[in-house]
Length: 239
Image (cartoon, rainbow, N blue to C red):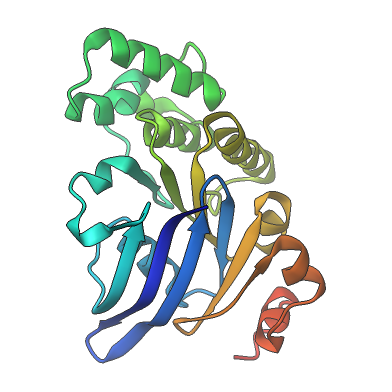
């Protein structure tokens, strides 16, 4: 069952076309990866899905409803950027921020923050100073903040690009755990091909603003439908 549908979306900045006629359906509970080289439009597409940007044309359908006419939709989504913002406060206060904004009571906040920190492997660290965490711990805290209010869809923009291999493995495990234990639909934009192979269910290939192929994880690596997809996966930057 589809949770999010993108219909004929286009976007430009000035005279530069960034996205061209994007059509895509995201299924409830899947991990969907958008892959493509730098500058392909991956981050712009995520920002449009999270309603940070308004496309020049096209429609967004969330759970069967027009996203542009659905009040409170942003509260049902969460986006994690490549470099997360860290408030000069405790880990607990950083993670609890979204709950406080939404008006949760103190007891509910304490319970949800504890559960989120457990999910990302930071149990008992609520009193630590957030800016004293290591890079890997900071990213895990950011994941806790992104999931603490149980969003239906989690959008990830290159979430492991600045991490060492050990922390990349931890984050990938957290991504799968969030989907498996919470049922969260996850959309990840990345150019990390091995990572896509390890965690994704389906893949969309974005090239020069065009979604040239959507395929299963098996299909994209064994029988890609477009030679340009195969070239990107092989690391042949022939575009």
